[in-house]
Image (cartoon, rainbow, N blue to C red; front, top):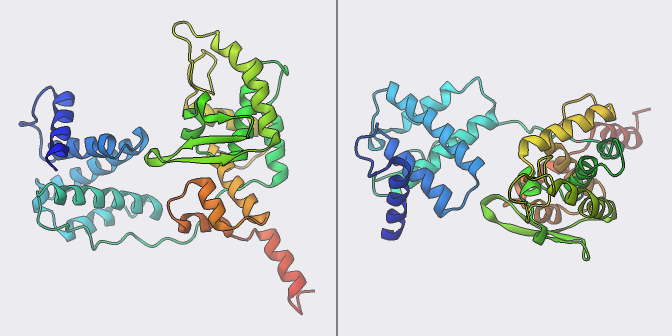
Length: 326
């Protein structure tokens, strides 16, 4: 515990230029908490940023109620804050409450409170929301559209390899852009992905992704790497037009443009490929536990949403099975 406190105090010194002693209420504790989840737990910058956004909104609310220190917060304060979020989706409210739970558990570990008053506050119930999924034909059209233009164009080769890889592995955007050359084993068709909480897993990929990746690595990536004005990017697999590591925002744009060229009119985002990957595996006969491992889900409950039945399959099954359906 002493070592942990020292790390957190060092983080505060580096962020504020000294020991935080004249900060606003909650500011010091928030800085310590964000240092803890970022340094000690090794969570991604995006996750730390989400915690920061959720908790600053929460503490701003507490200030308006005259609750200025963490030991003054009551269960009613937490419930009242969740009530103010009625216009948000149940998923967003659940995420904010999860951030609050982590914050109060941290305060308890730091002996700033004697009890975690948020512990008994439950997240709002949400109806099952099915993920956005493409059909196999739509995925094929999307992947074909990614390779528009000259067959040797480095950007087209990259886009094709990126989308083929994401559909073949079900990788998150952060995992795809964070992938290094050392993580790829083309001979065995296996990649090491680093997911949430720096957890690593091995995921296989098929011949389509292998061919696209080989084309990109042999022709596209060297051309992009030469465009770097300063230090060449030696480790990242996916590079942008300037020879640097590709960003998450760029992946979103690549998916959008490929979708437009493929004539897919419904909303598309990078996670659609991950949803489609999981759904198509389940429909193809893969068991949920296997898909859980491939996706890197901590709980099988998260994976079970992909066991949904599509409307077309539902109608077909009803028509075939019900004695008075025809």
